[in-house]
Image 1 (cartoon, rainbow, N blue to C red):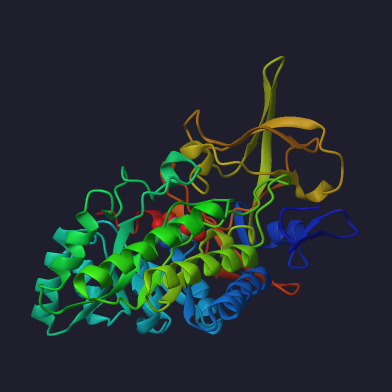
Image 2 (cartoon, rainbow, N blue to C red):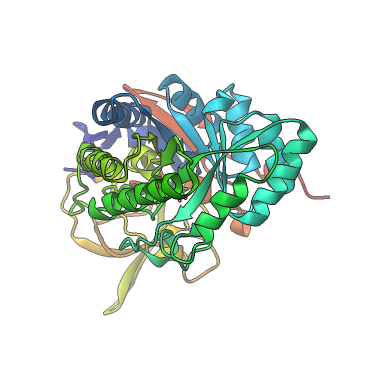
Length: 432
Ligand SMILES: Cc1ncc(COP(=O)(O)O)c(C=O)c1O
């Protein structure tokens, strides 16, 4: 009935997440409130790891793309589930290391890492640094020499795949700020250059074609293009690179009519494409990495709000205002991201109000969703927005000096705070 298995309804007609009553959660912890299902997150990790085992016979690793949702507890969960990590900033790296995440399983990404971030990554002995461009290669080499260490690197490659998704979350095509292009020879030049820089060891290649992709075909195509490139590197430079990171981007269910392909099918078809391309290119199958972010945490999270004013503008629309908005979920304002919502204390009542859910920020574009069906509502009701586990808390801000909501983890009918609600004191703590 709902977009995620972790959501159910109890006898009071209240929405539940991981068997916790969301209305009770709102009362206990206040709103706005992010709630993540620990059960669902763990189940998603296990599904990807099993799939990796099944289709790559253990010659691979699943990295959680932690930009989707980053805090200490999620890194503890990932460590317990045996996952590796994709981090994209010194801050994500710091958070992961602060809970003892094994550095050798961390892949450090980013199109413009600062020298300080690179030094921090080298000193922390992260597993791999994913180098975006030649300037970064040069800087990293110099910093590695200074630190007396060798950086194990992958190159981020633009495979020239145009996955059909929103412009802001498309990354595989030549006009992207990320990585080195294949079409113009830039990527090949970088591979050659890597051989000449001291304290650099090139172990493989990386690509990521975009996000919220439902089709399998672009993933298979990207794998083929990347393996053809590995073949060219072997044929022309005599270099057999042992690793291939195929990125993340698997689509999730935001709306009831979204129908994501089961992830096992992605893995099965992409692994078949990997194997046949390796045979065609006469290379050994590389160690494969994938980097799911949204598909691990997205549908495992919801946001609870308290309804305030309901403003009906006859013949135009009805605004339902809530006590959060673009400061805790900027995704509709940013790229019209679709969401489903419901009144959590009337979960199975018919959705016969077409509403625009508005936030409390001083911005007309501060909307969570427009023209969406919800139950008839009154001030004080609890509104739940579904599938907000990815890129919500991690993209949140203090716009209008609104404190960030708490994050609660729900597991098997129990709940606990994993990120405290910010206070007004927190808001001024760095002000001088
Ligand atoms: C390099 C890289 N890997 C993985 C991801 C995760 O993508 P998703 O959350 O869509 O799985 C991203 C997202 O931007 C990315 O840039």
